[in-house]
Amino acid sequence: MILRIWTLASNTVREAIRSKLLYTLLGFAIALILLAIALSQLSYIDNDRILQNFGFASIRLFSVAIAIFVGVNLIHKEVDRRTVYTILSKPLSRSEFLLGKYFGLLITIWLQLGIMVAFFVGTSVVTGASLGLSDAAVIALLCVELALVVAIATLFSAFTTPMLASFFSVGIWIVGNLTRDLKLMGAKASDTSIEWVTTWLHRVLPDMASFDLTIEAAHGLPISASDLAIPMVYGVGYIVILLMISMAIFERRDFR
Amino acid sequence: MIKTTARAKQWLSLAISLIAIATTGAAHSRMDFMSNPEPAEIVVPPRRFARLMTLGFDATFADYYWMRAVQLSGGEENADTDATAGILETIVEINPWVDHPYRFAAVWLTSSPAIVERANRLLEIGIAHHPLEWRNRYHLGFNQFFYLDRPLLAADTLEGTIGLERTPRYVPRLIARLRSSQGGLAVASAFITQLIEETDDEFQKAELSKALDEIEIERRARFLDEAREEYWRRKGRDIERVTDLLTGPNPVLERLPRAQLFLDGFEWILHEETGVIVSSFYRSRYELHVTPSDRARQKRWGEMRKRQEGV
Image (cartoon, rainbow over the protein chains, first blue to last red):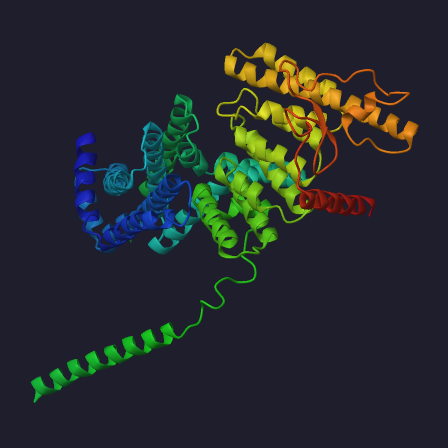
């Protein structure tokens, strides 16, 4: 089973790295990382921190964009070209097909993340900005966040069109970034129903803010092992749930 | 014929492209944005929704607004401090872990009592997030004394800097002066004595002992001020020199206290400019030195505050 998933994943990587969209977004991300050098010079102080914040923001924004816009197309392409019939006629279950696609895209996303991080490290070294373990922690959690975003994109691409899947995925990612603040605002609201709604939004939707340690890294705040481990466990758990739902939907999907 | 037509089409496309580039470039270069580089108001999200609007990119948005604040304040001599305060408040709302914006607020937001109060609120947030940073406390104390004329509150604030890394050595003496400014020489003296007992730094001990000597001389000078008033009451005129207090048929004092605690050769004199009694060793009184214009501003702002509170 693992071998079958791995074969499909490696094929997915080969297919994904041929995507022009991926290279376009990657190019923009690298351009923005380099632009951060110029932007950081607009301040007379804290240039290193600004460079780091803009660098991390560029990496995060474009990695998520790639994960969503490349991710939502993967299954649709197979269905559209009717290659899904050929693949599924082989001794391969639909769940294995979906997992293969998921891991293939995830590897692709992590590869492009590696390229962006290499450019980020390069610009930091050139400008003399300091890098440390806290920066590695930011990247580690970003890897988990991207894995979760790919899972969200995979879930929606399992039953709807790329357009709708990208719309839903972007929406979930945005709201996922806001749930903490919404919960805090709801707690201050006089209406208890608002508090109830915001609390449940925070519980049910993915808490994307939990994967962001940029501020801690940039300001040298302490990052404990639990700051890293708990979001990782949370992220992996959420991914498993999403993939289970995706597989259940995909098993029942009618391709005609 | 076909080849010629195709070539003509290519030339036509090239010509249209070149014309389009030239026209766009010309139009763009004529856009006058330098004479009005900034809109009257920089759009800043309301503080309540600021964090929501960053969509998780808190640090980046805080940096963006920080750069806008720098440009707004650095670009004009009479920068709009109200707008700068708004931007800085938004920055702190989005990312309270920022460091320099707090001191930037302290330095730039000084145009009115209300603006200074806003800067002080920002500095209080800064102290809450960077409790080991002496500079935020120092700026807050300075604002409280220098702009809002609240020396005792400033002394309380500055006391928080003692023991923090990199706090300048002169701060305890400044606190003592602030405490003495409202007649609290005993408090100032007790404060310094306590610091001397607590510190292991011999240099610091010596510096503080000097401050203690200065307080004692100030106490004696204030005693002489009272004697001077008595002289006025008895003779109906002011002294011409400090030794006048000892002379005449009914002298006010039998003898003058020492003008320097340990060294001989120093005396009490009338300051050549202010006419107040000073020791020739220090040549000034133990008080906070505020220029007349700053003193006038403190008074003006104080009256303004009272009026506002009255309303």
